[in-house]
Structures are given as structure tokens and as C-alpha cells.
Length: 340
Ligand SMILES: Cc1cc2nc3c(=O)[nH]c(=O)nc-3n(C[C@H](O)[C@H](O)[C@H](O)COP(=O)(O)OP(=O)(O)OC[C@H]3O[C@@H](n4cnc5c(N)ncnc54)[C@H](O)[C@@H]3O)c2cc1C
Ligand code: SF4
Image (cartoon, rainbow, N blue to C red; front, side):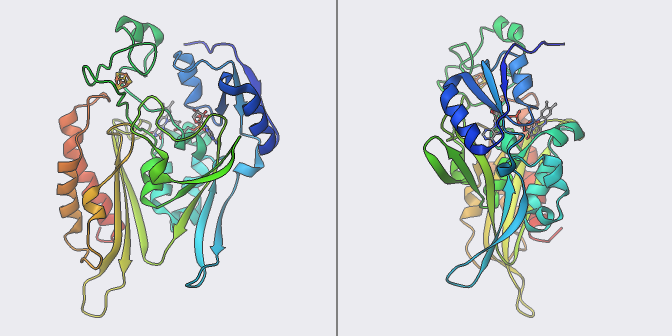
């Protein structure tokens, strides 16, 4: 069993206290929520904070509720989910299951029951990227001469590559992007809201736009009539593993007039666990408004197969992972469009 290094543990009572503490501690500190990713990474020597600041007591990070948003064309609604909510709570919430099925389905498929009981949405959103050459013990990595992401100068996935392409492995990320969510942050420079689609960068070393000391407080998901969503995941063991591929689809449907097939107002498909940033499928964004839903799952599955090329950053065979892009995109779009 790998031992944990020694560190100081802080457990502030309020969000303001946490922000002040994080600003004081600077790069000596890391935020901890459920610890299901941070602690294994500390054991492997991948992150070496002197202090950890727990956000688990912060009431400001709790809650799941619907909120009315007054607007020009009548009231709209949005779903607010606190970053401190456990994945099991999100998966089991009837409100999330109804308003944002892709997020409930993604949360339900993270790790195993213990990870979902401890792991939080905030921790999942900020999960470190993963790679077969990085998520290893210190001695394993040392024997290979380390790599760009930690302690080394080379990438073993893209030979001669100057950029880390470790895989975004957080299941909530494609779901939140597909659902058009906004991520609400509070930090030393105040509050800001970042669309989930702009939250991730293509840099596997640090793949989010979070600035030091910033805390994810909650996510806001817009709710629109006729909106449906679904999430699909490929993993080695259905009971526990990280994704080898994940797909979230969101379809905004127009009600079909009598005798007319149902058509789409908008569609978004996000494929993840390929590179450092979840990928928004270009072919889905280009689907014209009013297109009939029939035929979309197969058309988008073929387009996704052409657009997505998995790398050797994860353990399993890339040819199999690429073939599965086609299958999971077809399933996700068909379920979101109520065709399956
Ligand atoms: C065996 C195993 C299998 C797993 N399988 C999966 C899987 O299938 N899918 C998946 O997505 N994950 C998986 N995980 C990873 C992990 O369990 C989940 O991603 C979980 O949601 C992480 O949440 P946490 O609260 O435990 O995060 P922590 O470990 O506490 O933190 C993770 C990161 O987020 C940061 N952080 C936490 N909260 C905040 C916040 N509010 N604001 C800013 N930064 C924050 C921390 O500083 C840290 O960098 C697995 C882990 C293990 C050990
Ligand atoms: S993609 Fe390359 S640099 Fe990044 S973790 Fe893997 S081997 Fe290291």
C-alpha cells in the first residue's frame, strides 16, 4: 500500500474563509473535496501540496434546485447544482434525472459506489487528466525517464510532441458542455461564470481555465422545452473504471405537426476521453434547424468516426476505441432524440 505524504489539513467553515485561506497559502495549497482523485495522486507523487484546504463543510457549495429566470420572452428555468454535491446525490436526484438526464447518467457511471458516495461534482469538474504513462507510481515513471506532465521533458504518447495530450477523464465534463451549462467560480478576483464549453483547454498538464485559489461553487444548466439528453460511456469494467471514451448528446426537439416527423431546433454532441479537452462534434453543430430527427443518429455516428481519433494515452486498443465512437454516438443521439 502506498503511504500518503505528510501535509497540513485545513477545514474552513465558510466559502469566504476558504477563499481567504487559499489566497494566503498560494501554490502551497490544493483544494480537497471528496479526495478520491487528489489523495491517490498525492500517494503517487503526482501532486505534492504542503497543505490541503477542504471544501466539504461549505454549505454554499450544497444544494440542487430549479430557479426561475425572468426574461423578455417569459420566465425561463435553470437547474442549479452545488459543486459540493456528491455524485451519488446527483445521480439519484429526480430533479436532475428529469431536467438534465445526461448529467444524472454521467454521475451514475463515475467509478464505483464508494467513489460516488465521496466524490463531488466540483472535484469531478476539476479532475486531473489521465495517461497510461502518468497515472503510475514514482518508480514506474522514473524507470521510463518521467514525462512532460511531471518531472520529465518528453511525451511518450506523441513522440517529439511539445504538448501533453493526457485524456480528460471526468464524466461530468461532456455532459455539462452538451447541456450548455455555466460553471460559477469564486476566487481572489471575485466571481465569474464560464460556459462549460470554454472551461477546458487542450493542455493536458493543466486543462482548465481555473486560476490559483479559485473555487468551483456551482453549475447552472438552462432548461428549455423539448430538450432531451443522454450519456454513454465505454470502460473496461462496468462496475468501476474511468472512461476509455464518453459521449454526451443533447437534442432540442420541435414538436412534430400532425403527419410531420419531429425535427430538431439544435443538437450538441460531445466526445471525451480522447485528448485533454472534451471535443464538441462539428458535424452536430452544423445540423440545420428543422432537420428531421430520423437518420441523425447514423449520420452523426459516421461523422464522429471521421472526426475523432483516440490516442494511445489510455490503456486500451485505439482501433477498438475509435470503432466505439461510432456506436456510442449513435446510441447517445438516438436516446436523446427519443428514437431508442
Ligand atoms: C478507482 C477509481 C475510479 C474512478 N473512476 C472514475 C470515473 O469513471 N469517472 C470519473 O469522472 N472519475 C473517476 N474517478 C475519479 C474521482 O473519483 C471522481 O472524478 C470524483 O468525482 C472526484 O471528486 P472528489 O470530490 O473526490 O475530488 P478531489 O479528489 O477532492 O479533487 C479532485 C481535483 O479537483 C479539485 N477540486 C475539488 N473540488 C473543487 C472545487 N469545488 N473547486 C475547485 N477545485 C476543486 C482538487 O483540488 C483536485 O485537483 C475514479 C477514481 C478512482 C480512484
Ligand atoms: S500525454 Fe505525454 S506528456 Fe502527457 S502524461 Fe502522457 S506521456 Fe506524459
